[in-house]
Length: 83
Image (cartoon, helix red, strand yellow):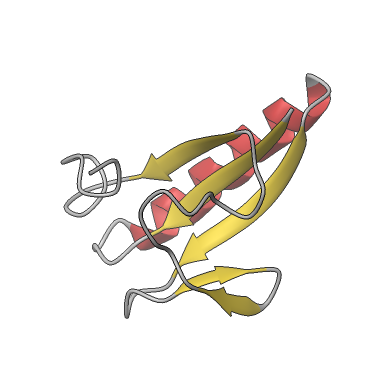
């Protein structure tokens, strides 16, 4: 399964989310899954593999089967990303 691990975010918890997301991705890879790193920069841009990506409803997330949001604080734990 290909899983997008979404980390970072606009809150003050950005650095914690980066570390947590790395740990989640490592665990997923150890379990045999392929991961795609997606970082939300503090300014709200979404970056994957060094390239800004456009997120849109029902557009799919980088051809992944699932998304694993690892976001902390406002704009993350409040469900904003999930819609």
